[in-house]
Amino acid sequence: MNNWYTVKVKFTKEFQDGTLKRVTEPYLVSSLSFTEAEARIYQEVGEFVRGEFLVTSISKTDFADIFHYDDAEDWYKCKVSYVTEDADSGKEKKVNNNFLVSAHNVKMAYERIEESLKGLMVTYEIPMISLTPIVEIFPYEPGEIEGDEYNGGGSIAPPVDAGDEEINSPNINIAFNASEEE
Image 1 (cartoon, one colour):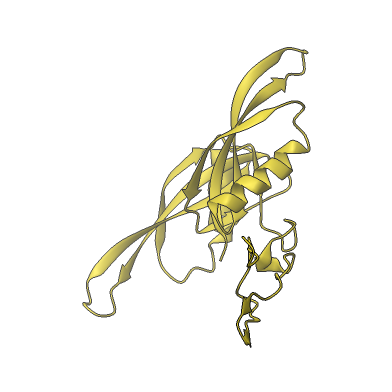
Image 2 (cartoon, rainbow, N blue to C red):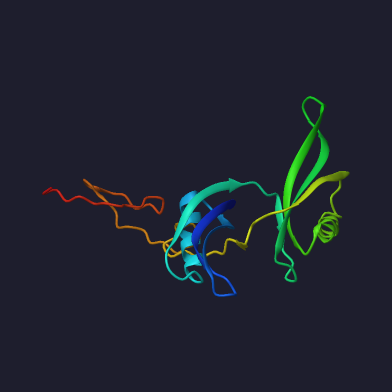
Protein backbone atom coordinates (compact mmCIF):
# COMPACT_ATOMS: atom_id res chain seq x y z
CA MET A 1 0.00 0.00 0.00
CA ASN A 2 1.33 3.39 -0.98
CA ASN A 3 1.43 6.34 1.38
CA TRP A 4 1.78 10.03 0.69
CA TYR A 5 4.89 11.85 1.89
CA THR A 6 5.55 15.58 1.86
CA VAL A 7 9.18 16.08 0.88
CA LYS A 8 10.78 19.52 1.23
CA VAL A 9 13.65 20.27 -1.13
CA LYS A 10 16.05 23.20 -0.82
CA PHE A 11 17.75 24.47 -3.98
CA THR A 12 18.76 27.60 -5.88
CA LYS A 13 15.92 28.66 -8.15
CA GLU A 14 16.26 30.94 -11.15
CA PHE A 15 13.28 33.25 -11.56
CA GLN A 16 11.93 34.66 -14.84
CA ASP A 17 13.78 37.94 -14.34
CA GLY A 18 17.07 36.02 -14.10
CA THR A 19 17.61 36.41 -10.35
CA LEU A 20 18.75 33.46 -8.30
CA LYS A 21 17.31 32.72 -4.87
CA ARG A 22 17.66 29.85 -2.40
CA VAL A 23 14.15 28.34 -1.88
CA THR A 24 12.59 25.38 -0.09
CA GLU A 25 9.67 23.82 -1.96
CA PRO A 26 7.36 21.00 -0.80
CA TYR A 27 6.48 18.11 -3.11
CA LEU A 28 4.02 15.29 -2.52
CA VAL A 29 5.33 11.80 -3.30
CA SER A 30 3.47 8.51 -3.25
CA SER A 31 5.72 5.67 -2.12
CA LEU A 32 6.01 2.65 0.12
CA SER A 33 8.49 4.10 2.64
CA PHE A 34 10.44 7.19 3.68
CA THR A 35 13.51 5.78 1.94
CA GLU A 36 11.70 5.27 -1.34
CA ALA A 37 10.16 8.76 -1.09
CA GLU A 38 13.66 10.23 -0.78
CA ALA A 39 14.94 8.15 -3.70
CA ARG A 40 12.00 9.19 -5.87
CA ILE A 41 12.40 12.88 -5.06
CA TYR A 42 16.09 12.75 -6.01
CA GLN A 43 15.08 11.16 -9.31
CA GLU A 44 12.17 13.53 -10.03
CA VAL A 45 13.66 16.83 -8.84
CA GLY A 46 17.06 15.98 -10.31
CA GLU A 47 15.50 16.18 -13.78
CA PHE A 48 14.63 19.89 -13.58
CA VAL A 49 16.88 21.44 -10.89
CA ARG A 50 20.23 22.73 -12.05
CA GLY A 51 22.99 22.37 -9.52
CA GLU A 52 22.84 20.91 -6.06
CA PHE A 53 19.71 20.40 -3.99
CA LEU A 54 19.06 19.07 -0.51
CA VAL A 55 16.14 17.15 0.96
CA THR A 56 15.44 19.02 4.21
CA SER A 57 12.49 17.00 5.53
CA ILE A 58 10.17 14.11 4.78
CA SER A 59 6.87 13.68 6.60
CA LYS A 60 4.01 11.25 6.16
CA THR A 61 0.88 13.05 4.99
CA ASP A 62 -2.61 11.66 5.33
CA PHE A 63 -4.89 12.20 2.33
CA ALA A 64 -7.97 10.05 1.75
CA ASP A 65 -7.83 10.84 -1.98
CA ILE A 66 -6.36 13.27 -4.48
CA PHE A 67 -8.36 14.79 -7.31
CA HIS A 68 -6.18 16.18 -10.09
CA TYR A 69 -7.53 18.41 -12.84
CA ASP A 70 -5.18 19.30 -15.69
CA ASP A 71 -6.37 22.91 -15.96
CA ALA A 72 -5.09 24.01 -12.52
CA GLU A 73 -1.72 23.95 -10.76
CA ASP A 74 -2.71 25.13 -7.27
CA TRP A 75 -3.49 22.44 -4.69
CA TYR A 76 -6.19 22.90 -2.06
CA LYS A 77 -6.53 20.79 1.07
CA CYS A 78 -10.19 20.06 1.81
CA LYS A 79 -11.25 18.78 5.22
CA VAL A 80 -14.41 16.67 4.94
CA SER A 81 -16.31 15.64 8.09
CA TYR A 82 -19.07 13.10 8.51
CA VAL A 83 -20.68 11.13 11.32
CA THR A 84 -20.52 7.35 11.48
CA GLU A 85 -21.85 4.85 13.98
CA ASP A 86 -19.60 2.37 15.77
CA ALA A 87 -20.89 -1.14 14.95
CA ASP A 88 -20.01 -2.56 18.39
CA SER A 89 -21.05 0.18 20.80
CA GLY A 90 -23.65 1.98 18.67
CA LYS A 91 -22.10 5.36 19.51
CA GLU A 92 -21.80 8.07 16.89
CA LYS A 93 -18.31 9.15 15.96
CA LYS A 94 -17.18 12.15 13.92
CA VAL A 95 -14.70 11.26 11.18
CA ASN A 96 -12.47 13.79 9.42
CA ASN A 97 -10.76 13.06 6.11
CA ASN A 98 -8.42 15.28 4.14
CA PHE A 99 -8.64 15.46 0.37
CA LEU A 100 -6.41 17.29 -2.06
CA VAL A 101 -7.87 18.90 -5.17
CA SER A 102 -6.32 21.05 -7.89
CA ALA A 103 -8.20 24.27 -8.65
CA HIS A 104 -7.75 27.95 -9.48
CA ASN A 105 -9.44 29.27 -6.32
CA VAL A 106 -11.30 28.21 -3.15
CA LYS A 107 -14.70 28.34 -4.83
CA MET A 108 -13.57 26.05 -7.63
CA ALA A 109 -11.95 23.69 -5.08
CA TYR A 110 -15.27 23.53 -3.20
CA GLU A 111 -17.21 22.78 -6.40
CA ARG A 112 -14.72 20.12 -7.46
CA ILE A 113 -14.70 18.36 -4.08
CA GLU A 114 -18.52 18.42 -4.06
CA GLU A 115 -18.55 16.90 -7.55
CA SER A 116 -15.97 14.26 -6.62
CA LEU A 117 -17.84 13.20 -3.46
CA LYS A 118 -21.39 13.26 -4.86
CA GLY A 119 -21.57 9.43 -4.75
CA LEU A 120 -20.80 9.34 -1.01
CA MET A 121 -23.65 7.64 0.85
CA VAL A 122 -23.32 9.71 4.04
CA THR A 123 -24.12 13.32 4.80
CA TYR A 124 -20.92 15.30 5.06
CA GLU A 125 -19.75 18.85 5.52
CA ILE A 126 -16.66 20.68 4.32
CA PRO A 127 -15.48 22.80 7.29
CA MET A 128 -12.18 23.89 5.76
CA ILE A 129 -10.52 24.49 2.41
CA SER A 130 -7.03 25.96 2.30
CA LEU A 131 -4.39 26.59 -0.32
CA THR A 132 -1.31 24.38 0.15
CA PRO A 133 2.26 25.26 -0.78
CA ILE A 134 2.67 21.93 -2.64
CA VAL A 135 4.47 22.55 -5.92
CA GLU A 136 3.96 19.20 -7.62
CA ILE A 137 2.66 15.70 -6.97
CA PHE A 138 4.49 12.54 -7.99
CA PRO A 139 2.08 9.57 -7.87
CA TYR A 140 3.34 6.01 -7.56
CA GLU A 141 3.95 4.23 -10.85
CA PRO A 142 4.96 0.53 -10.81
CA GLY A 143 8.43 -0.13 -12.21
CA GLU A 144 9.50 3.49 -11.77
CA ILE A 145 12.36 2.96 -9.29
CA GLU A 146 15.20 0.73 -10.42
CA GLY A 147 15.70 -2.15 -8.00
CA ASP A 148 12.26 -1.77 -6.42
CA GLU A 149 11.36 -5.27 -5.23
CA TYR A 150 7.72 -4.31 -4.76
CA ASN A 151 7.10 -3.78 -8.45
CA GLY A 152 9.25 -6.41 -10.12
CA GLY A 153 12.29 -4.22 -10.70
CA GLY A 154 14.53 -5.93 -8.14
CA SER A 155 16.56 -9.06 -8.41
CA ILE A 156 16.82 -11.95 -6.01
CA ALA A 157 20.26 -12.77 -4.72
CA PRO A 158 21.62 -16.32 -5.03
CA PRO A 159 20.84 -18.66 -2.15
CA VAL A 160 23.12 -18.84 0.89
CA ASP A 161 24.93 -22.13 1.48
CA ALA A 162 23.24 -23.59 4.58
CA GLY A 163 24.99 -26.93 4.78
CA ASP A 164 23.15 -29.54 2.72
CA GLU A 165 19.98 -27.42 2.52
CA GLU A 166 19.49 -24.80 -0.10
CA ILE A 167 17.37 -21.80 0.80
CA ASN A 168 15.64 -20.40 -2.25
CA SER A 169 12.97 -17.90 -1.30
CA PRO A 170 11.84 -14.77 -3.14
CA ASN A 171 11.45 -13.10 0.28
CA ILE A 172 15.16 -13.23 1.14
CA ASN A 173 17.56 -10.67 -0.29
CA ILE A 174 21.23 -10.90 0.61
CA ALA A 175 23.18 -7.72 1.03
CA PHE A 176 26.49 -9.39 1.97
CA ASN A 177 27.63 -12.98 1.54
CA ALA A 178 30.77 -13.67 3.54
CA SER A 179 32.98 -16.52 2.39
CA GLU A 180 34.24 -19.18 4.80
CA GLU A 181 37.80 -17.81 4.60
CA GLU A 182 36.87 -14.48 6.26
